[in-house]
Image 1: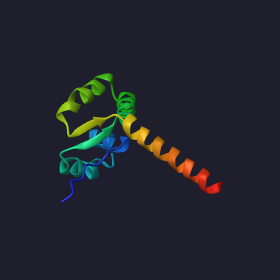
Image 2 (image 1 turned 45 degrees about the vertical axis):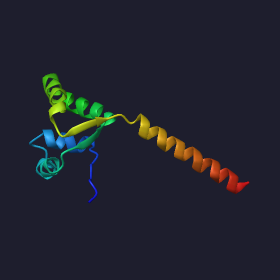
Image 3 (image 1 turned 90 degrees about the vertical axis):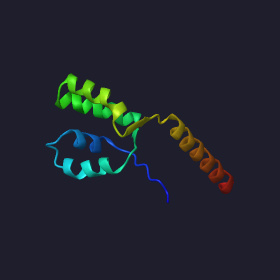
Length: 100
């Protein structure tokens, strides 16, 4: 059986952290369902901003300190972005060869 590792986005995390969010009860069981949830570094910046904007800086620090004990695994996007760029360049070259 294939193991599924989901990737999170900003809305999911904000709803999970905010019990008054209308989606909180939808995302909580999903968070509990998976042992690991990939958390792109770009999302980390967005979440920290939104927590700090609607809450206090202490809440941001609390969230950041708790990351290592959570199910979230922060990932860098550089290697994934490079693969996408390489793929786009190959497609562009193929299209140029086909058009010639």
